Length: 439
Image (cartoon, rainbow, N blue to C red):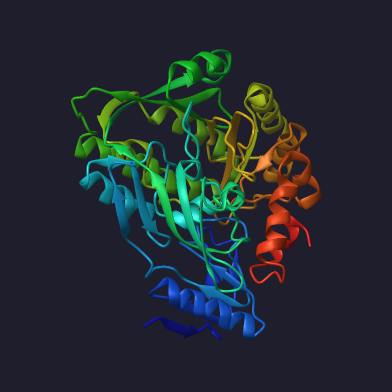
């Protein structure tokens, strides 16, 4: 039986703490049938509907004053097809549970983002990605989708079945229906060797094409107010497994990356003038290390320090220039930035509203500690990103509207036309979708 919670006094908040909403009611369906019934009931009652995962989006993409659907009972693996190399999983399954379950079965996703707290449907619907030379976002690994549409019917789509829906719904922003199950491409479990090492900012930019070409997965973090970066290369390995030792792992991933970093953020928030000095120390704190492990243990890491984030995808060939402009802006601005800037890449894909749709892309993510004013920094960064035809991550802070987005997404009209067909009454509308997709 599904639980319907009256949310009269219930306020929903996202992980970053910058978005809240007061839904008229909450529904936690235990089956696809119950979810479909909740959608039909909402339509009868004249209420809008939104599904929400773990709230890891910094935009109000999941906020609603109507019916909030929580998918936590729709979890688990439905089916593994080893011959086809696919796994079908319920939409509310956290990526962490999927990764662990697949590893037990000797399987893995090809690529993933750097955290795994999100639900599979929340992560894919917003275009969550890692870094990769040939392998794209989590959504780019989708082979099939099941979704409940506005009339309460269940629609299945893949390259063969309803292909025009498949082309858009893999990154559907919650605008086309509520995803209930996803079929991902998987492959036999493999090992990755991670090599992490500090590198000067100018050297990374000078060698960027080479670093990208020579590594399956390359990313780096630049520490504002310094000329330092920390680089990470992940490549497939024949083994043997050499995981990070427990003590070293605790020291580097928990103590330095979360514990000391948290304290540094508190100090920086109280005394912003100390931030450049803290940044110089932080950039030198993490030493070089190499380890070999199964994919999810290499790709993902814990993030316990809460922050607010903006991320834009720019054409890969514009990356160096964009980063130089960002560094110049920070150096001249008087801003005090205590969080590193994260840089990743993705190959072009064929999903209508993917940030990598039709073009090889590079991602630049800027962060601020939760509770510190981020507007001045994000506004200045966004001005640089948009000058390079940047596409904002759908789940991260940005101020773009449908007019701008239609100009940077060649297939924008294709998506909105499909939405007109699947949700003519705008049952799945909210303020965010009104802004980014238009009326």
